[in-house]
Every structure is written in C-alpha cells, then in structure tokens.
Length: 402
Length: 180
Image 1 (cartoon, rainbow over the protein chains, first blue to last red):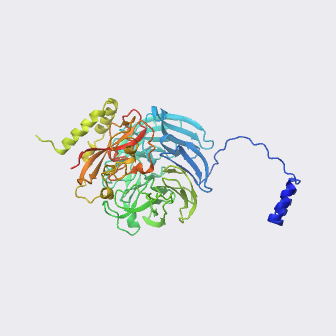
Image 2: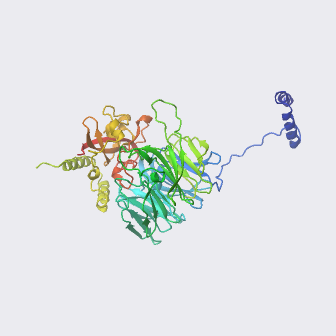
Image 3: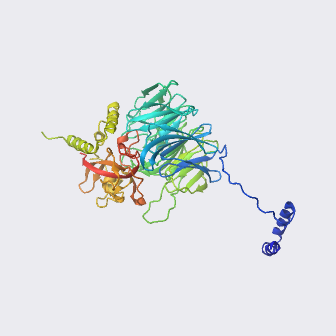
C-alpha cells in the first residue's frame, strides 16, 4: 500500500517529495514507519516569563482567560465567580481572584472570597473568606501593595470600607471605613488612596500592627460636573498616579502619606483643540468606554480610547486611541480604530472597542477588547494590528507587572 | 400648610422605602452610611437637579414614551442592564419570582409627553440569575451617571442591597415624582 501512495505522490508532486521521502526514510533507518507511541494523559502548566501575556474577563464570563499575545493562543484560564476581579502578584508567582458565589447558584448563602492560584499550575492554593465585597465591575475594586504582601478589597454594603488581607499569612487582617469614598489605589507597603465624592482623595495608612489612619486631601475636582474616571492609575512602587476626568483633564498626583496633586492639563489641548467642556450638546473628542485607558509605567505613556461626542458619553467606546506622554503633556500619536464587524443586522450598532490594556515591557503591546469579542493585539509604538483574537466575553483586561 | 415639592418627594420616597423596609439590619447599615458621611448628599434627590434650562441630551431628544421594551424609552435615560420589561416584568415591575431591591439609585429624565423632568428610581430586581433577554434589551444609558464614589448616581453597582440574594436579574425604572 505504502508503495502505491509513494508512486501516486511522485506523479502528483514531482521529484521534490521523493527527495524528502528518501531523506526521512534514511533518518528513520528504513522505509517502514514506526507506529505512533502511546500517549500519556497529562496536564499542562503555564510557561514563566511571557512578557505579552494578558488576562481577559469580567462581567458575563466564567473566569479570566489567559492569552499569549505573541502567538494569539489561549494558555489557560483562571475560574472566577460573580463580578470578579483578578490581581497578579508582582513576582508573578500567584494570581489572586476576588469573587462572590452563592451556595445554590444565584441563591443560598453568599460567600465572598479572595482565591489564590499558583501561577504555574493554576491550581487553587487557598480560599480566604471575606466579610464582604463591592459588586461593581471596576478594575480598582481590588489591588495589591507594591510587594504583594497585602491585598485591598473595596466593600460596599452600601457603607464604604476596604478589607485588607495579609497575603503572607493568607488571612483577613482588618477593615477600614472610608465613608463617601470608593476604590483602592495602593502605594508602597503602607497604604492606599481612594477617590471621594467631595472631590478629594482619602489617604489610608495601615501600620504593621493593623491600626489605620484616614486623612483627606483638599478637594481638587468636581465630582458632580467633571468627575474622575474610576479607571485611573497608580504606580504602586513610586506612588505616581494619573487621574483622568470625564472631560479629558489629567491630574497627576504623588500618592503617599503626604499626597500631592498637580494642576490638571487637557488631553484635547494636547491635541491642538480647545479643552472639552461639559455641555450636553457640545461635540468634542472625549474619553470613553469601560476600561477606557491604559498606562505604561516605565515610559509614562497614557493610552486613551477617544470618541467624538457630547458630555455624558463617557461609556461610549473609542474610534481612536490617543497616545499621550504624561511627563511632557504632549500628544504623541493618534491611532484610528475600525468598529468591529458584526453579523450585519441593519439596525445593529457596530461595537466600538471599549477596553484597553498595555503590556509593561519595553516593547509594549496594546490589547483591545469589545463587548462582542474579536479582540485585537496592536503594536503600541506603531499602531499596527499584529493579530486578532476571538474571545467570547469580558471587558476587563489585566497585565503582569502592573 | 402646603408642602414644598421636596417635602412631597421626601414623603413619597419614605413611603416607598417603608414598603420595602422589613430588613432592619440593612436600614441600619444605610443609616450608618448617611450618618458617617457628611460629604454624601443627605438624600440622593437633593443633588438630582432638573435640567430645566439646559439643552437636552441626545437621549432626551430622541426618547419615546410608547414602548418600554426599548432602550430609548424615556425613563431609561440612565438605565444600565437588562430591561425587566423584556423579562416578564414591566418598567417598574419585577418579573415573577424576582425581588425588588429595597433601595435604588436615582436619575432625572425628561418625559417627551409633557417635556418635564422627573425623578426616576432605578431599582434592580434580584435573587435570580441574569435575565437572558435579547441583545436589544441590554441598555447602557449614561445621562448624569457618576462614578462609584457617588454611589447614588452610579449605574454599574449591583443595586441588590438588602434583598435576600444580591444576584442581579434585571433593571426597572420607577417614576417617583416631578424633579422641579
């Protein structure tokens, strides 16, 4: 039989295949191929050191899917419960999931957890019971201290507080009330800051013994007229923070025991336009989306999903990415985005990209998510689309090193 | 003595709350929030100023008052989620077996029939899995929607506080009263 196949192949593909066949045959020690070996059923593990790994998940998904953006391949996934969030240990040895379950699906006893996963095997290491957590899909509802020794979980009961978890001992260590404030922006090992409804930042320091102190900065933004997006940024190592407002003002801050906030600058003015106002019939370029901006810590570059719209379009996805240097307040590049093709129903709005992440290495990639999947990997320096990744759900993107 | 509009609104909200307020623990926690937070508005409606003389938002310009299963139905100007109208309920009615949250967040929408601003209580229906209605019933209005640190005006929070289960099923929008 084999000879017949070889003869047919020679007729079809010519001499090249004969040469190849002879070479292979010689290497195997003869024309007869050994039978395939029996396979072992085993379990994969995650490779270390993937600079372009990203995690996508959030509302409506059953976990955080891990992709290698250099290949577009799914590497695995971390299961997650209701309104879950994920933080990555700074040394990338652990993944932490803050999540909520009910014992009978959507009913029964409620359980709020921080679940710890091994970053190589993705095996569950430990579940830490929480006294509660906020059910709101915001990236900054869960984060770690600079070294990863503490986790901070934002709680809304609807009284606002933060539960802090000792991740070395793997226990809940305490709760701090933050009335009128929300979310966590950690700095160093000592504490975190929260955004407040009076336009200030709360500064929360927690000593090793567990005693907490809460102070406030002076109000510096108007939470009613031009609030700061929850999707703002802090470099946990340095405390350098970037806060972005609905109208496109950037407030740079140094978070810590003596938090300082600089005067804001306008990203529209950086692009040569007038600063965007707050008029409901005032068309201007505006930031918008779900996770609408990404920050590259080493370069200080800010990537913002932008669209033309009136005020109160802060949830609309982007038709462009604006790349801004937060050190010089300069616009470096505008990257146009195409809406994602859909099934083609006539009355269906084309989905715009609504979430963006950036890898933290020195050759950064951008990860763009939209509500319908069809995610995109883009070269952050050129705007070139490197590959597309079909992905069913999610609007949260997390990256190692942040 | 005649009551001011805010008195009337306060009375209506209180009566509504009383109708739901069997869970004392929850009300106590809410009370703690309000008492401990002088920087929060005392009542959410205190800050829900009517947009009387401002130009209308695009939502307000194109809103309709006939079909409450569409995202552009006027009361949904800041609704975020799946419409209960598509899930066996109505614009202010939970579907069978779901439980309305005792509290809500507050929006202000313009009724195209009389061009007046009304306070809307956005109340989630809870205790069942997410309603699997079609895509056109998933709305994301954002008029006057503020971040989580202004929770009474935020529509991303699961507003199922105080219900037996905080699992979100769908969203309603109950007219509370005139805003002006």
